[in-house]
Length: 158
Image 1 (cartoon, rainbow, N blue to C red):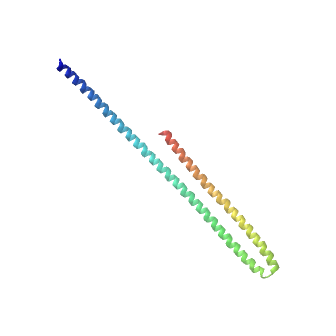
Image 2: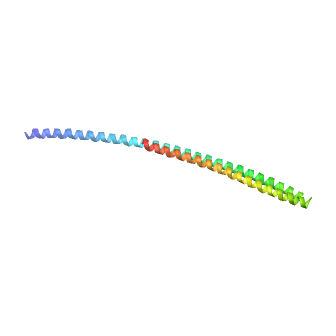
Image 3: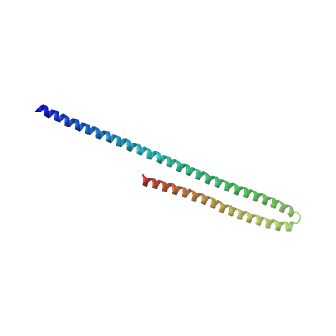
């Protein structure tokens, strides 16, 4: 009787051991699959992050180049205007030698004109500079908002 009970007990233990080992094996397979899926998702996110970083860098580089080009253009225009004004001033000085009275009036008029033109030119340059910087800020803000939207979308998806 005891031998039969021992044999039955050993069969039950063997069956339960096999079920346990099967469950452990299935659990390990599921964990491995889950880990691989997680690693793939993280890898995919890193690729997207790197692409967005590159896009941002390209945008910032482009805006910097545009700003630099605009500043160079304005500087060249300013230098040309200053040279022209200096030439006009030199001519006015030469004319002053012909007639002190007329030359003084012409000199004063020309200086007023030069000052007004210079003020106008500086105002125009400042407006153009504000426009370029504003556009750059808007472009940068748009890029930042798009990146934030992508991050929110990724959070929602994953």
